[in-house]
Image 1 (cartoon, rainbow, N blue to C red):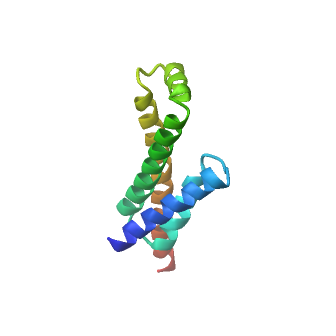
Image 2 (cartoon, helix red, strand yellow):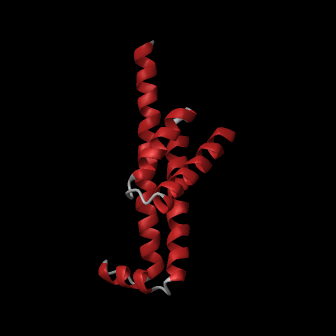
Image 3 (tube, helix red, strand yellow):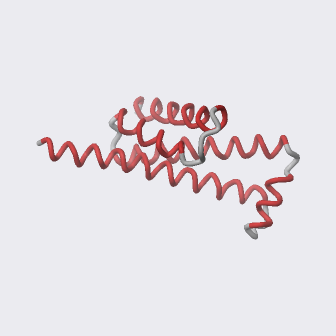
Length: 121
């Protein structure tokens, strides 16, 4: 359980740094979750959960923080563009998508490590 939480925190920190400080593309957290899950040797379920939780919580908290800063202007417009009734629903959907992408990236790392372990014998 300790490795799971350590990996999750590292995924959150590296994803935050890559997106918010270094201004890298939106998909960079998926790459980072893949690398972290590969190095921490998490099981398939824990790898997916760590990647999902890390990026879901990160994207949701960043969206809420930035939404408050710009007085809900952007989130209201994006929610209207996607025909959602509510700005918070839009943020939830965006965070869910980011969590799924990163969760599946971390799951891919765990399954790849498992496949190569079977090849090595």
